[in-house]
Length: 310
Image (cartoon, rainbow, N blue to C red; front, side):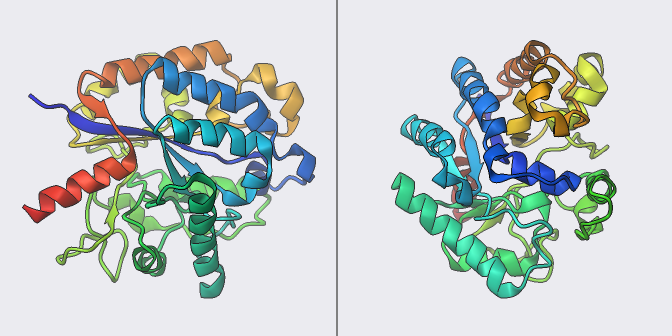
């Protein structure tokens, strides 16, 4: 019996994005600190587990060699390079239509120019996606979006960002994400969280959540429930039709590194030693490898579209 398809993606946010989230001040010299420490670990994780991944890139960071060179290496190894906008404005949906369109188009062009491959995937900053953005993506040749986390905790993540930033952000809560489809679907023209009755050239690939409970399956939450809790809940994930595991560069940073990035010392899960976190991630991959064949998100999208044409 053929295995179902699964993906591990990494949002390549830097220090500047986390400082925006928490409301801290920063200077440009600190942008690559998470990259310097975390990216070699990211590469090691994917290579040792023999996983083909998808990397969502903020293209404004391509001016840094610490960002560009590792990405060139990953692209040469067959990993997918996808767009995470040009400057990762947060909240994204509250920007003008002109800025939103420019962020999407510029990021796609820069990635294709730098890596010489078509860019077909997108993830919005802070999961902040709407139907207007979906239309722009479809018009510009994107094949999928992966910004929907259909979890009961999605609005709470926005609340946390407002609280931690001292209420300087005003990102929408997107309560509709809570009940969005958990399977790959064609997004409606009226609402990105509803299935369209008509087929489109672009699909939505939701980030995986625990079946029925809709609790999020991503490192911040997994570090909270621990391996004992996850061992009891993981069998639920094996029943999914596909698997979409979202990670961030900071998930590969630990309290051992905090002295170098002291402003992030309270970030959830950062207090765990890196060796413990890495063993945890390896165990998740090994367990799910029995049920899923690892592929890039564009492969998941194209496989879905192929089945829809039958």
